[in-house]
Amino acid sequence: MLNKKIVLAIQIVYIVLITVLSLVSIDTKTNINVDNADKIIHVMIHAIHVLLLFLVFSKYNINKPILLAIFISIMYGIVIEVLQEQFTTKREFDIFDIYANCFGTIIAAILLKFKGKAIVKLI
Image (cartoon, rainbow, N blue to C red; front, top):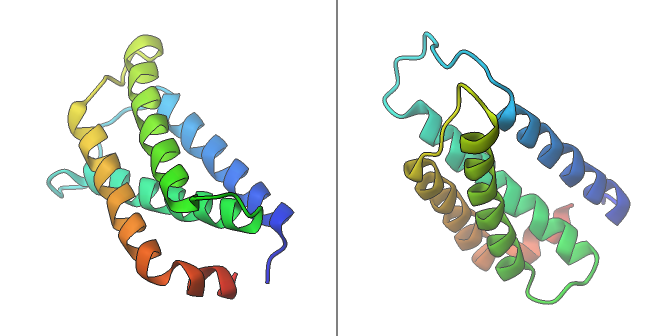
């Protein structure tokens, strides 16, 4: 079992990494020919974010860990989209990114609703 400080450190490193990668201006042209590949990435990022937040909140015995994780993940996704529009030159606000973020959040929340206690016991 991971102790709560390690789980918190993993969450902090994860969110810092995602924030930096979301705000640096990079060439968005890639060789990936999958329709909406970036949306799939958004779904995965936010599903993982919710899972990590849930683990942190559960380890620290915070009430309503799923709801709090959902709220924080959705707000974080919106803030990042606004920051991309305001402070980057090659990134822009995309409402469909927010929809993908919410979808990833919902997927994780459903998983946690049914398997959250088992996941906490494993970690």
